[in-house]
Amino acid sequence: MILKTLLDVIDILESSDPVERIRRRLEGRVKYDEVTVEGVPFIKALYEGGGRRVEILGRLGAIQTGEKGLVSDADGAVISLTTLLELLNLREKGIELKLDVSFATNLSTTAKLIPHSPFKFMVPPVGLDEALKVEVDPQATTVLSIDSTKGNRLAKYDDFALTHVIKDGYILKLSDEVLDIYNRVTEHEVYMVPLTSGDLTPLDVNVYHISTLISPWLYTSAPVVGLATVSPRPIPGYETGVMNLNMLEHASRFCLEFLKYMEKGGSVYNEEELRELERRFGPSNLVRRV
Image 1 (cartoon, rainbow, N blue to C red):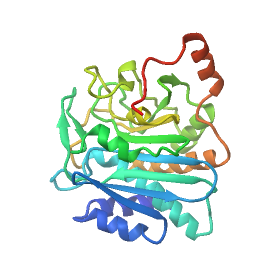
Image 2 (image 1 turned 90 degrees about the vertical axis):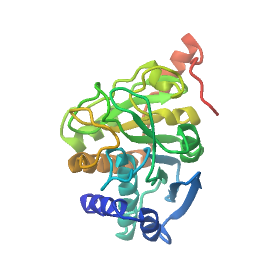
Image 3 (image 1 turned 45 degrees about the vertical axis):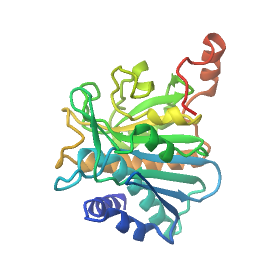
Image 4 (image 1 turned 120 degrees about the vertical axis):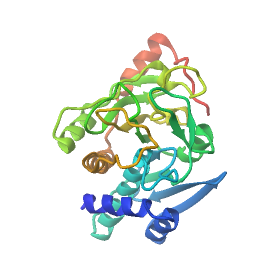
């Protein structure tokens, strides 16, 4: 039951040594690795089911900041690890996903704050670009990027929201099949994150960014879909006591159903639309960093 798994993950991440506790849960059950860059612990795992590879990427600055409890910014780690542990639980019940799924997130307990309105962004102490170099799986054919996006005045909903697809500098319509999954899981209309051209640029470009949600596209040629945890009112990433269990359960269940869809050969966008845009207008002027 994914709610039980979610509560288990929250309990682990709230502990004094979450890296050790996650290590004990994963070692021997899945291909697992830890990468530490300038003191920031990154957790990476590969669920090997065969077939093409999809990445579930939990983006965040930190899970804790010295306060008492998980901060709002921890959502990416919570959802990605809940999805991973639920896949392993299902495998032990004899339910195998015929898909390779890579997972990456960080479990830092400190973060940098950088200017942003209405609240400062939290980014890992190692910096956004260095974090993305570790996090983004170059072998993934699709990336689902998860990030807390509550500190804004645009995406104000009472459940998680999705972005359209980012591919090679273009914003492409998210497939109807993925929207159907969202409808089934949440039992309400689709909530979308409004993106601007500025959101596709690196953070060092001095324009508004709603979050770092879709920044992984800068380091992959794979299509990137953003999954944002949001809130009806702006909330800073460094606040505690603001975890929405209903939204986190919905988002984790969506990730699992999304993987089942990808296992069946599903696509997140229409390749013909990208080809038409490139034929008429050429490659996007927004280029990747790799």
